Image (tube, rainbow, N blue to C red; front, side):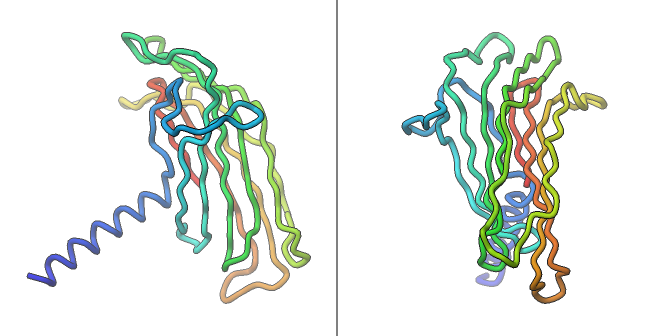
Length: 195
């Protein structure tokens, strides 16, 4: 009996950690943030923060922010708009490497079957370590009204990627790491983040 209980707990914990690695957020955007906090200088409020280790052993801390613009997102159907900021810290083998962030103004309307985004800001901050360097810092990709085929919902997204390298590779790694921050919002105002 004890073995069956332990096997069930192990299986549940494995499924929870696997989903945290691929999708860090699955929420509906609202005009009122879910966390009570003071807005920062730009008016953004932290609504969630979580940490996990991805399939490459990179420790990631992801934070979601929303700007309270006073725009209503409630109606007889789902429509609205919101300014959001997503950011993620990346740590390899206990050493901080980088932080990536994106800000976007998302608009969605389920009745019109549209989702659009305007890029507001993006960037990255890297470690001061002399043996870790930024190899590539790509400009973010943004797309509107993607998907929707075969019963799916259309969405818009922002994706930013960077590549970093260390001069002292550890183990079987060649010392290069690709870091990615992706956020999409569908026509119902449902947000997903991937790192």
